[in-house]
Amino acid sequence: MDFKNKTVLVTGASSGIGRAAAIEFAKLGANVILVARTKEKLEQVENELKKFNVATLACSCDVSNKENVIKMSRMVFERFSSLDILVNNAGFAIYDSVTELSVDDIESQMKTNYLGMIYCVKAFLPSMLDKKSGHIVNVASLAASFGLPNIAPYCASKFAMLGFSEGLKHELRDTGVGITVVSPIMVRTDFFDHPSFEKMPKYSSTSLDPKTVAKAILRASNSSRLEITVPSVARIAVWLKHTFPFFINPILGRSFKNQSDSSKK
Image 1 (cartoon, helix red, strand yellow):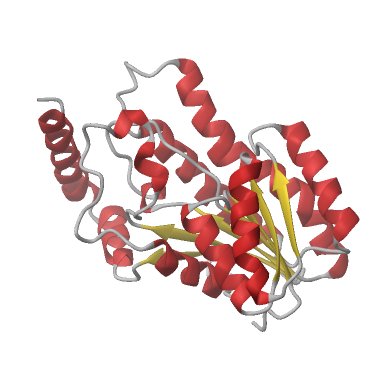
Image 2 (image 1 turned 180 degrees about the vertical axis):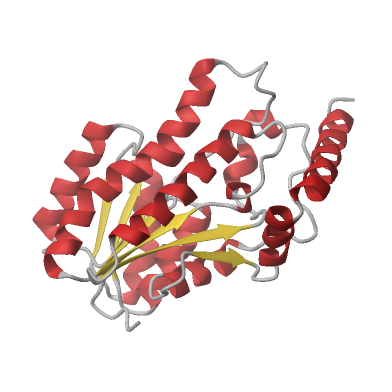
């Protein structure tokens, strides 16, 4: 896809994958709408995009709040006539067992990671359908395919995102609007800055640079595929899990449980 003069909205745009994606889109001439909770951080990213001579809009918005998203969408349509690409990237995790997490902890992850995506889709999909073009990119995780200990609610939110995207993809057939999920392995971002990750090893040797995932998001924006894993070889792990769950699941469970137990020592 030629991104020049296209209008792209990225949630969670103040840092990490969202910031990297915004920069990559702007490099290719796209107008970029930056959405996140912290206005000051958004303005810093907006300043970074000035050198690309594209139109930008920084919208402070908590996507877990439905009214916030409705207000944000009105601001977007006041400035831009339509939206070409919606990147639902905002998300976070709290690392702890279900028994230790409060109900509020669990609900907050689902509200941001899953319902935040729903609110944005509901806000912007109608305009895409009206003009018979557009693409939704939902940034999930390999955790959308693997239920892992101590991040069960996060996994649930990403499972839900993938399932919703698959169902919606069928509904969007022949409408001119596409949807693709990008599922990366561990990425080196401030995702792990939450205090709950304090005793967990932050990154592995295979963890990705945000720019790598950002480039996958750009590919996804013009893809007919339901899901793009990053790196692509990770698709093998997903296939193995779905094909031999009775063999793979116990191995994964023991591996992550051992890591969790060692981090508590």
